[in-house]
Structure formats: structure tokens, C-alpha cells
Image (cartoon, rainbow, N blue to C red; front, side, top):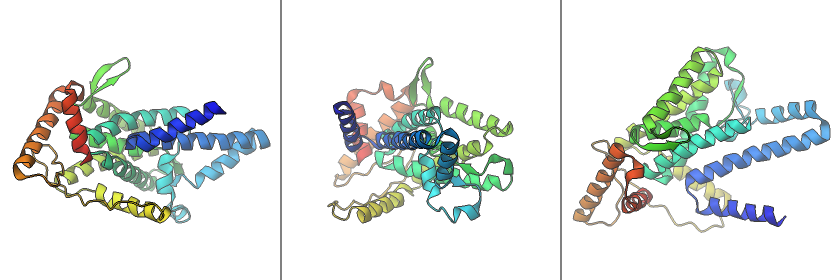
Length: 308
């Protein structure tokens, strides 16, 4: 028991001090393990046939349905479906992608934008799945998984850091643009071959949302802000006893030359210009040489800038 207690303490500590990517990975794996534990209990009590049938009936209420009429009776499913996974490799593959692309998004445009992109991407993927069911009835009745949300992060990472290098096992350093293009190619092949077409269409919906998120951000419209405000209100309703400091409004400056302006509260004009010049120089260096080639000082500066 002491071992499990120690593991639980480590997980809670990682969740408390970790980035949003860490928290999302923990939540997704936690829900996956919880679902499997419930299935194991049903299996031991009732046997395999009954356990499988009952588990699927229960999960249907958390998956997003293809039918809009069914959605009326489970309005929470557009959110819950993006935290459910069918198999171990399903969740591992999605969490691997979440880690790769989520870290890039957090590093380059701020950790507070990771969860909004994830949620908006999952919603867009679910919407694409439901719309496609009107024209492709064979795609299935329900969908689940974080793939649409992960592809939204992939689309965001592609636009803000196409030459960002990622070290992959057996392949070495690979630029993000090639990873994302391969994933998109697999999705198009899957749709053409009618293999899990609904899932692949959901991927494209999430990807499109991620790209659009960046384009709107460059125009000065931060879609993350209303999402974070809503989440803060929900947190306040759930935990009214917790004292929370009011969030500062963050005005997003219009980006130029493919870069993003960071918020600099309280800086003098000269300091502000110097800050922006250094940030732009670091972002340009990432595009040319990759994040791994930044100096420790540049990485620290970029980390602090993403938190502003």
C-alpha cells in the first residue's frame, strides 16, 4: 500500500506543478484506467459477455453521437468524448501526439492556450464527425478519443513553428511540418479507403480549428481568452471557498512577420521594444535551427515570455 500511496503522491505533485500538457496527459490516462477498472469489476462479477455489453451501454452516454437527436439527451458528450479511449494503444498514441504538439504550443504562445486549443479542437472534431454522418451513414453511431483535440494542437504547432525539430525514436530529429503532413496523409488515405472515416474526418476538423486559431490570434483575436474565462467561472462555482486572485485581462497585440507579441504589463516603451526584439529573434532562430539549438538563457527567456 505504501508503494501505491507513493505513486499517488507523485501523480498529485506532477498535476499540481506541471504544465497543462502534463495535466491533460494525467487526466486522459486516469480516465482510461478508471474505465478499465470498472470493466474488470463487471467482468469478475457477471462474465465477459455481460461486462462488454454493459460497459458499452455506459460509454455510449459519454461518446459523441452521430445523431443530433441523440445529442439532445447527452449534451455533455461533446466534452466527455475527447477524454475517452478504446484501447491502450489508442490512448498512448494520442498522448504521445499531445505531448509533442502541446509542448510546442505551450512554449511558443503560452501554456494558458494549450487547454483552449485542446477543447476547441475536440469540439470541432466532434462537429465534423456529426456533419459527415449526414453524408456517410457508414461511419458509425458514436465517436470517442482525443485525436481531434490533438490534431488541433498539431495544426497550431504547424503554423507557429513549422521548422521546430522533434526527436523521434528511430528517426532522429524531424521537423514538425513533416510529422503533421504525414498524419494528414494518413487521414486522407483512411477516408478514401473508408477505414474509420468518421475518426479521420474528426481529425481534419480539429486540425482546421488549430490553424484557424493561429490565424485569428495573429489578427488580434485570442479565442483562448473566453474559454479560460468560462473555465475560471466554472472553477469558481465548483470551489467557491477557494480564494482566487482575479485574472488580468490580456490584450493580444497583432502579430507581424509571423511572430507573436507577448503581453508586457508595466514595461517602459524602450524596455517593451527591447523585449519584443529579443522575442522575435528567438522565434526566428527556432524556425531556422529548431528549439533544441537555443541556449539555456534563450529557453528561459522564452519560458518566461510564454507565462506573461
